[in-house]
Amino acid sequence: EPEVTQTPSHQVTQMGQEVILRCVPISNHLYFYWYRQILGQKVEFLVSFYNNEISEKSEIFDDQFSVERPDGSNFTLKIRSTKLEDSAMYFCASSEAQGPYEQYFGPGTRLTVT
Amino acid sequence: RKEVEQDPGPFNVPEGATVAFNCTYSNSASQSFFWYRQDCRKEPKLLMSVYSSGNEDGRFTAQLNRASQYISLLIRDSKLSDSATYLCVVNPLTTSGTYKYIFGTGTRLKVLA
Image (tube, rainbow over all chains, first blue to last red):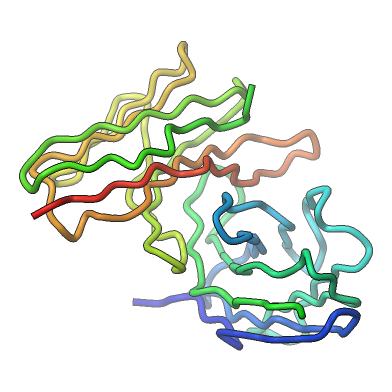
């Protein structure tokens, strides 16, 4: 069964450093998403991406965040200058189409900012 | 009012019991609805979509009441392996014409032997 994969599974970084979280969506999916979940809190939408453009972003997704699809398979989330409050689980998701369709989630990257 | 509201629980039930979770949402423009299951420190996994007519998948039944903006999930004959957090997800159409998931905080279920 096809699945979304993410690397690394755990990333530890110092405050102020840049991190890149990587995702490989399901191969025939066209819509990609990033979510985050701070420990003990709900899953929050960050950004959606289609056709090499951001479709929608939340208030959390400020100028320190960016997304990219550098090739035909990878989808990345970059955090330019990490803060302590960026510590969270980051989930990538993909869906076959836009609209009221199911999204499938990767296993997540646990980001710890020290 | 929160966008998606769930009772956090925990619900502690014996094996074999029937348990029901409820969820309310505030955005009447919401187009689709889902239940996801999340195990501790793992990703959300799709349990089932929720349709207006109600739908069933084995021991799981989901219902949607658009008029009351209310979604439910019923689990019959609970198994130990059903212990998890159940996430209610609403998928409204945004002002920019796209869709995004809005998650509830989840309801924790613990099935006891």
